[in-house]
Image 1 (cartoon, rainbow, N blue to C red):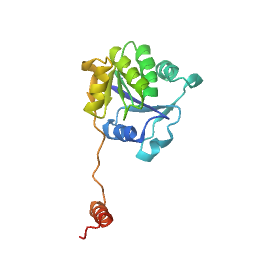
Image 2: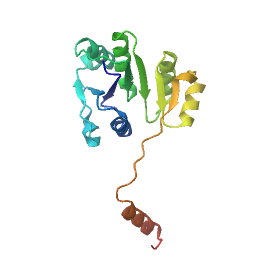
Image 3: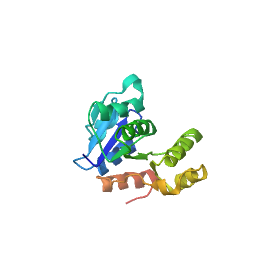
Image 4: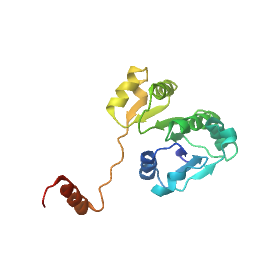
Length: 172
């Protein structure tokens, strides 16, 4: 049984797909609940999973019951994928769930993440500020973690620097 299955979906933000690309080990499955159109943009080729009635949680049950994919940890890379991860974890008999999001759009999402942490899910957010906001909404401190956005050094650093300096009116 693989240790981690990464779950993405059509709502997974490009930044999160880049994180999956950087963090997933070669032996770990990356699955998509339905089609994640932008996964190919970062070089991901996820296994497409059936999502009964377009319900992510049912998709999580399907993942383990019909596709026979099991793991110790289901890592969801969006709030919608979190439902699938929870369904899969229940079907596996209590696997761990990690939910990573690039930002929190509104108070409902903040409350949903706080509830997930109270259910034992580990929640990762990009900044300490978001972590503090989750804690004020009742999230468990032991389940809230900071995962900063991935950073890659620009390949064309000298030309980018020159363009930016020109834009600012600074001569080389």
